[in-house]
Image (cartoon, rainbow, N blue to C red; front, side):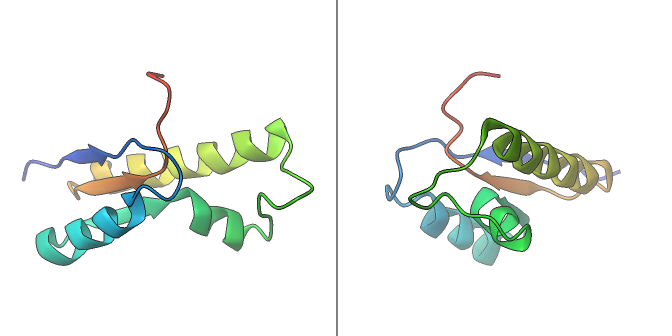
Length: 87
């Protein structure tokens, strides 16, 4: 079984995390899981009205499931979210 890696980016909004994540995908041929894209797929976005904590929890749960699925298939993946906490 080939070794898989989870790349976790951390940084403030507009710091370049997504740009770096896309470069990793391009150069390493790995998968990418993006919180923003999951929110878009779900038809929600953190606009002026904000997102409820329940919406955020569902989005992150979906991201964790996608990451786990890639890793279980021995695919490396980059977690393209802020990752501000150690949890």
